[in-house]
Length: 239
Image 1 (cartoon, one colour):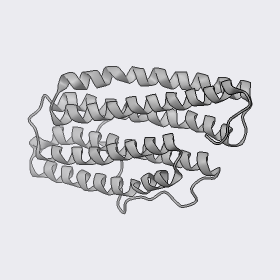
Image 2: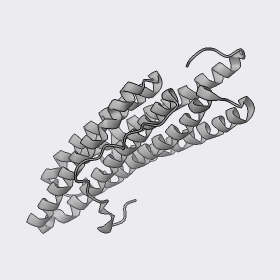
Image 3: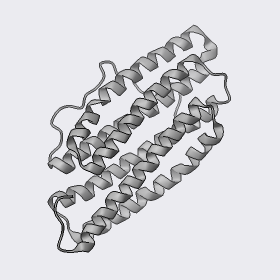
């Protein structure tokens, strides 16, 4: 962070806040990785651990909220310090949602693991790996306060949308070809949508980083895929 304050404890508090976000980010990354592994390896025990671990991320988010409120009240920050504190509050919310979506993936994996595997399952991990890379990159950008890295992540949202659209269409095709594929493919649709939403929250974090560093929002419209499909919630309600 730029410069040091005359009160050393203030610098220590800001550093502690950044460390809390880094810990939360690490937990969210682990949740996503575990959820994807439980799907690929058909590991229901791992899926259960991911679901159970979601509470840890929720608890840490509450700690971040309490700590930021205390800093705002006692330190009355301005300029970069204010953006840093408010940014941490926003990022913690996005990380909590990332972990929630990872838990949703694990819940669907538990059901899929009881069904015969279907071919489109391979497309979901590809989308997952792309989003994992994006989440890691945006967390690195946050730690380094690197707006260029953040913008690079921000631009990858279009790639996620396009991959999700292609996978959605593939799943529809499999359901039309064989009614026996309908149930597993519906679960895969929701898994893909949850992963795509994780990408959206990573993009939110990228925008927060830009504002934190630059003091202004990204002026361009958020990049989108050419044919983003609607949420599959018209088929069934997700967890």
